[in-house]
Length: 146
Ligand code: THU
Image (cartoon, rainbow, N blue to C red; front, side, top):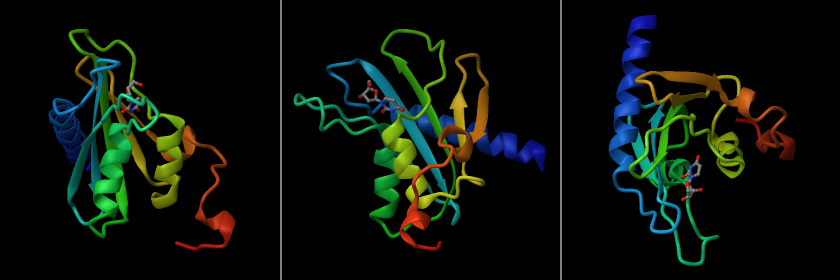
């Protein structure tokens, strides 16, 4: 039902906030948490992990995706993402970066996978991967069917 969908999305946001508390961000102080819901019901969380070399930094979304894939799970329904600078209130939604969108499209159906973004006002907005990555280059382009 619509009500249980809202409830599940709020639970995912809550898990993303918890994951955000583990973010390692000595350089940007911008902490992100993600909670990825697999089709089997499991939730994989992730945080961003920065690095003195800057480019090795891993985003929260990819941390969550790679945790799941590395445990044999490749089918997903949704991901919740929350982000804000330490000590500041979030005013903008934290949308996934382009690299994370590309990693999502490797494993998630663009017309089904839901991205849930906390709005900083106690609510959230949701969209589909196809809205954030139209005409994405995906496994189908290389002849791989799901
Ligand atoms: N970051 C994420 O973890 N996910 C996003 O969706 C946006 C950016 C991280 C990377 C870096 O540690 C910090 O936020 C600032 O770019």
